[in-house]
Length: 194
Image (cartoon, rainbow, N blue to C red; front, side, top):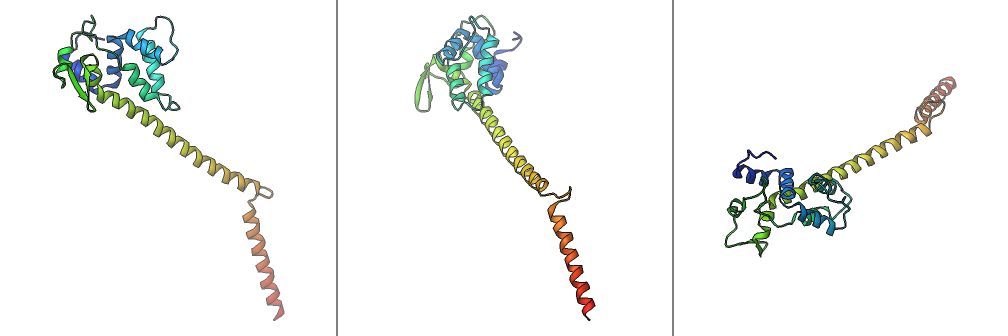
């Protein structure tokens, strides 16, 4: 991460960019994220890199079969903020506090949270966006299933028409020609009777 970002820019990115916020959390406290992933019994290589930790989260985001994925992602990212971190993520406790935290606690859903979880609160909108992304993936999957069902129904109708063909001609056309031929015979018969 470039060190040319100001604290204000970093806070803005935390609040508005899901990928940046996730990377920020991982970069700030990779051992906490690793511990939370292991606590969920998700396999990790020994001494995983930050990129490997991010891949676990990305895999959860893309796993539309796992109904607990959003909750698991929130659990994984729920690590204490380390203000003393020596990379771009450190020394931002003041800016994070300015986002609405007073007296060392913040109220979330009626419950007070300690300063250790302050930054999770600061990116609560982004974590909500994780849920929205996951919901979008589920919606796209549902739309894909609906489209597949429509395609299958259409293919079934085509198959049924193909099955009723006689000498490569649809059965309804043959029946129509036979009916027309029958009508012509009736008219000819009626015309000869006069």
